[in-house]
Amino acid sequence: MSDRYSRQEAFFGIGQEGQEKLLSSRICIVGLGALGTVTANNLARAGVGFIRIVDRDYIELSNLQRQIIYTEKDAAEALPKAEAARRHLAEANSGIEIEAMITDFNSSTADTLISDVDLVLDATDNFETRYLINEACRANRKSWIYGGAIGANGMTMNFIYGDDQPCFCCLAGTDNKGTGQSCATSGVLASTTSIISSYQCAEALKYLTGNGMLRKTLLCIDLWENQIDEISVAKDPDCPVCVHGQYSYYGKSLGMQAVSLCGRNAVQIIPEEPGDIDFDDYAQKLAPLGRVAVSQFTLDFENKDIGIKLFKNGRAIIKNVDDPNRAKSVYTEFIG
Image 1 (cartoon, one colour):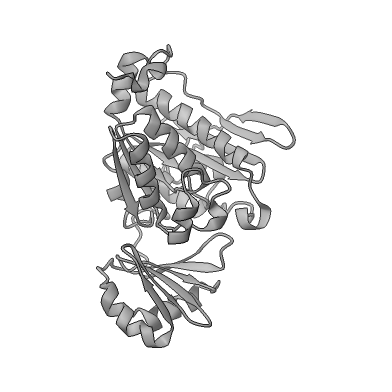
Image 2 (image 1 turned 90 degrees about the vertical axis):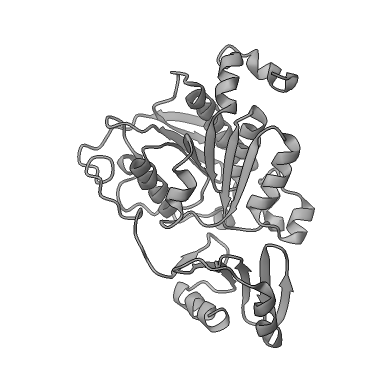
């Protein structure tokens, strides 16, 4: 093995055998914002052999304060986060495989994204997706690591697959939509997201190398108030997910989906069936109605009222709209 991992191999908890396990491991990181960029960066440099990175969004200038692998050039080009991350990570470690998935993690994509990996890492910003990750991982017998951050507060927990282990539903209940806070309204410190992601990465290294020192508690931090707590989470004997196998998110066909994006005044539209959009055809169709710009990955349309960022598979982000029903109407009117 090369000198690339020599300092990591020198650590007693990894060694050469552990490094070989990492190089043969496969993971999926869901979300490439503040948490996901740190996680992807750390684990790519650590030599995890296959990393699937999943994100539906594109880079904006406001991301750069905390989403560490993106650049001003990425934001100026409005690159999809998954593709920009893949490029930067490949430059950091060309000896591993990085698969960029410019898509939404939803009920129709979940199995494809996680069925062939050893571990899933949550780097999302909403509870609905975490409930889906939890259910999809239970159905696919996968372990996953939860992480969340807002302001100076963060938390993380390992959810290791096993009949005697609690799941995310045991922790959060069945109808938890979070605090209602968002990074846009409450802010977030890059140090918070970096610390939570680093904890996630350390636990991932333990899990992938077969180390028995995995943390079994919910870790909560408040950097501003200087507090660190660990909370025991018991398995709910009546949990609908890990006890009864009842899923509210996984395996559901919901037709066209509209998802409000956290703090963005924008709604994501996911068509019932993915397509293969011909950007040239749509550019001709939309040009008389407003400004159109086409890149390798997206078609952007703007008029005086709304904006649309259309992806190749038919998914779109409708900007300057906060009502999901209005967003569906806009999509139908302009895209079809």
